[in-house]
Image (cartoon, rainbow, N blue to C red; front, side, top):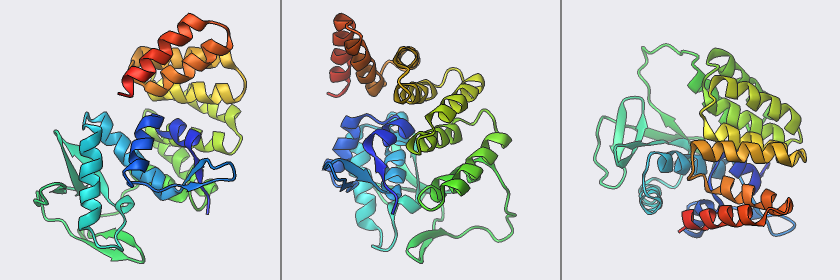
Length: 269
């Protein structure tokens, strides 16, 4: 079974190591260990971490995310995985949803009719039979995410189709670029991210992922520019501070490194 490193998840999702660590400590995800005792995450772990990140981006407090998702997991049948559910923020609350049906996670209140049934160890949502199947960029993105653990070639095709249909849709670029870097294709990832930035120049995670790819290629000066650009758009991107601090330190710019390290530590509190 294919697994993912902590660094590749940081690149894909832009989640800080502190947040990932808290989710691991809470038992929300249970990664394995590699030969050097490093974390190795399954595709299901990646899906769950992506969910947590999207909720954090909606300004849901980390403790509430962990509490709500833990409660949801406890109330589901054992054969129904959290990674098969669509979970989103509704105002300051967390809901499970599919289409127009939503259920408040902590209270269990049904906001709309919602029904799921386990099928072959995964989740199945009951859709209206008269709804035609429509190929949409969001559906292609979800397909690509599901295929990453089984067939990277098919996942890449799905992501590229989503990009072709919606060039300004950022998520497929992020996942595809991270997948490329994981496979040693960081040069291609750099080209992809630069194309994406033409469509969404104000997307901090694109600048961050571009910087990670450039750093993997040994292009540290360019990488540092990318980290600084991401922080200009999102000063709370903790890992960009950490990575920028490392590069400043390598270049002998100790005062700049200290400033970024200090900001990184402040954001982890």
